[in-house]
Length: 340
Image 1 (tube, one colour):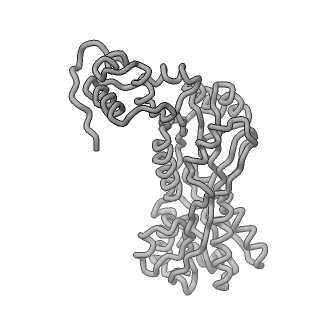
Image 2 (cartoon, rainbow, N blue to C red; image 1 turned 120 degrees about the vertical axis):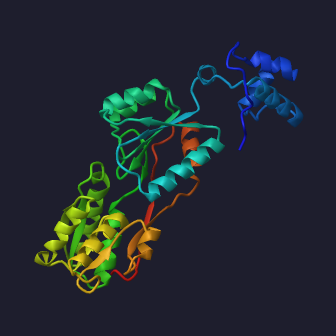
Image 3 (cartoon, rainbow, N blue to C red; image 1 turned 90 degrees about the horizontal axis):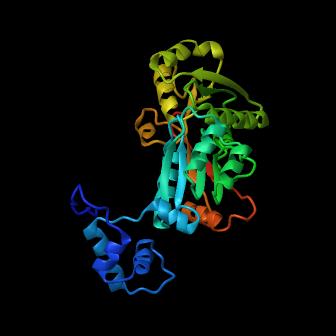
């Protein structure tokens, strides 16, 4: 990992003119090198000399000044919501951020908790991002999209179950998860299936489409689906398990692996045999679920794109006048194990 050289805490702020003087080049050359401009032919020894001079002086380019010159920033804004991100979302964000850095974008996360849709859009627009990628739990409206466009955003992109008018859409259709889980349970002969609906704030945006997908699959297979509200607490799971036999269910899709593990333990403590009396299905395919006894059946979710995500964002930025695009990213498949 590169280490910044120790610099004096006081004194004048170094400028590109200082770097040019130390490196023995023009200020234009300093700008080309430090902004990674590869369209101008500059020898590698000169590039190295400029970088060394900048490091020695502690000089970094002024982002605001660079944005004024270019007419836009290289900032990609990613608002953050209040809901916990799952493993798939973490993989998505890690891949996207590392790819955007490779393309010389600066990724900035913006805390948007408590802001309504229009206020949030105005707050994002004030930063003049070149692109905004808004996750499902952060509100974005067609009006907000228009505000961002007028402020100079070249690409406004939503990441969630449904597109928003005026924005590009990276769609993770959670209905596929519910449909996949119920399809697997139907193949195992289960016909009365509970679907856990987490009561934690922020999860409804994922849970409700999963329930819709579950109902869609059940209706085609002659099965019944019963929504089951559940808090992520042992007491809540124990209370549900205590009345389980009165529900007449022979299987449960427990939203994800975390809820599935919580409920399966409560069912076992209540004397409900898994999977003999009740099959249990999760989602996310966590390693911990494979360490349980019985091992947890799950839905594995994967991203599927024709090109790297960062390259897709860069292309949308480079062609802002193009048609709005929709990309369906989510692929789901059942992973059968011992729990059902």
